[in-house]
Image 1 (cartoon, helix red, strand yellow):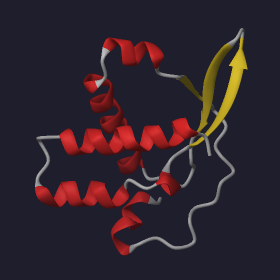
Image 2 (cartoon, one colour; image 1 turned 180 degrees about the horizontal axis):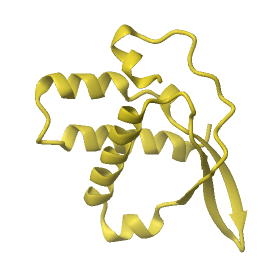
Image 3 (tube, rainbow, N blue to C red; image 1 turned 90 degrees about the vertical axis):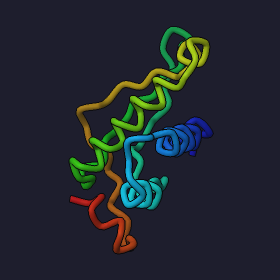
Image 4 (cartoon, rainbow, N blue to C red; image 1 turned 180 degrees about the vertical axis):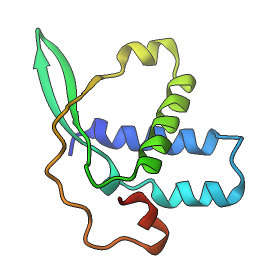
Length: 115
């Protein structure tokens, strides 16, 4: 996996830590859900010497989890400096879902993540 993929997970974890509107049960739920196996597939592409990612959504991820990840991404963006925003690799969401299958085993507290 590409290093930027892990950086995205780290940014989401930092954003979750910075959320002040969540109570402790919500913080625990989010902390247990932030796992690389639940992140969309990303393929690296280059066009006109500019690198970007094509994100292939996971068809088996619940809408609640998608909304949570979008919320964390917005929080992360709000915490990023202007220079960091310029350096951020662009991502384009594909209409084609990832072919990855859901994990065969998930913790009971992670079951809400799956459809």
